[in-house]
Image (cartoon, rainbow, N blue to C red; front, side):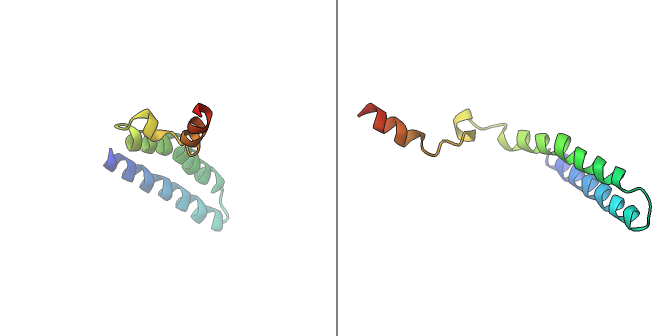
Length: 76
């Protein structure tokens, strides 16, 4: 999975770089930049989050900063 993520990062950066290169040469580079951003948002990010949290408990993924303090004050 790590190699897939690194490969996708290279592809996304390549598409964005190629788009900026075309844009600086007066061509239509917005299309390539957009494809790179969409690929990063809808493919790379979910795969990264899945690989990061696949072996974790649900409670470890949740952000409960003040929940324990609130429960302690409600019980008293």
